Image (cartoon, rainbow, N blue to C red; front, side, top):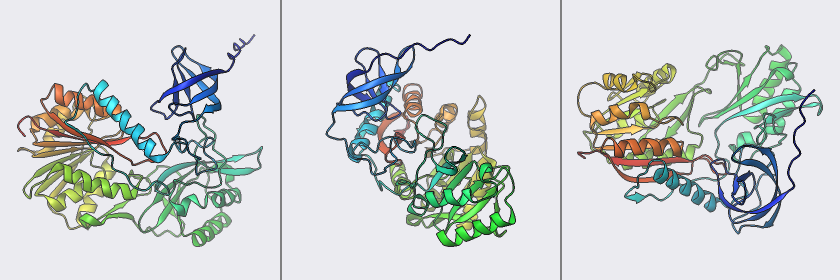
Amino acid sequence: MSRRRPPLPPPDEGVVAALNADGEGVVREGKTAFIAGALPGERIRFQRKRIHKSYDEANLLEVLAPAPERVEPKCRHFGLCGGCSLQHLEHGAQVAAKDRELRDAVERVGQVMPAEWAAPLTGPVWGYRRRARLGARFVTQKGRVLVGFRERSSSLVADISGCEVLVPQVGAIIEALSHLVMGLSIKSRVPQVEVAAADNQTALVLRVLDPPTAEDRVALVAFEREHGVRFYLQAGSPNVLETLDGRDEPLFYEIPEFDVRLRFLPSDFVQVNGVMNQKMVAHVLGLLDLQADSRVLDLFCGLGNFTLPLARRTGEVVGIEGEEGLVQRARDNAALNGLTNVRFHAANLAGDEAAEECLRLAGPGRFSHVLLDPPRTGARDVLAAVAKLAPRRVVYVSCHPGSLARDLGILVSEQGFTLRSAGIIDMFPHTNHVESVAVLDGPGG
């Protein structure tokens, strides 16, 4: 006999105290509740739906007293689609909320305070997203294929016809993509469409569990011509891709201020916001305060997004990255740009041996500057190596305030660095994602 779930409690009312890291409103009156769509300062009516030990998840039933920062979402799918979480909050207020989140993490988790809180770095608000992974699913009950982001708090593909944050050449053809996949013989065997919009072409990577037929290929080629995109078929490994015509014109993006062009695969990591990436690179290089003879170590360097611009402005740069394929493409990019003062190495930058390996590959001598741009888990395992290299300045680019705050605390409290400044970079408008950058001076800097 199955156990019956206890009935849900009656609806509650309360005032939203803050936003959590997922962009949900937090009500602390009584047992804490997290409510998507609610904003700080609002009085709301809500229904608790998932009961946990220390908090509950709830649905927003009614906004009784809206916040002055509440706006009408631009996208008609907001609330269903999980691609955005903050379109109902005025953009300036979004930036302010992310700034507060960073400050709270640095002060509470890192237990440090910068000499200066830097002004947010901002850019385009709509049509900025050049990288995305969209789900695709043939839904029998609807009799059609859905292509889009996942629904909020669900594994289901959201039923959307367009997207306001994707680059326009993709956001405007979501419905056309759905019709295209619906017409394929393998419509139930295409679970994913990955977007990689480069400066020279827009790539759409179709994950195919069965090979397309000749008729399918004809339809895909016609779609390419009509919409100015280029399909890649991914049948196995993410890096093994096939174009429809067998030719592979490399994708690239440019950073004009530094006369740099970077080639990449559609499956490679690149910063999601092209305009903000250009701004960020220039901003970070300015924060490093380089000299012509500076030696810079770029950890978690990827394709060379920072490394190659650094090589344009200073004496020597060493880039270290964990993924072998990215390292090879970084080397190729250096050659493509005629840069000979940069070296790249592959090494695992996480784990007990990361610091020792980092020091071995960096080579002898002192580095005047270190740049860190780690994944969400942060750079904790290489911080001892950074300290031993005794740089004059460290700039830390982060995609997670919590891991950044933890690492800043270690560098300041245990390694003697001074936190000069910290601030956010508005890389992902309308989402809860917080990109940030911090500047530290070495003990002898």
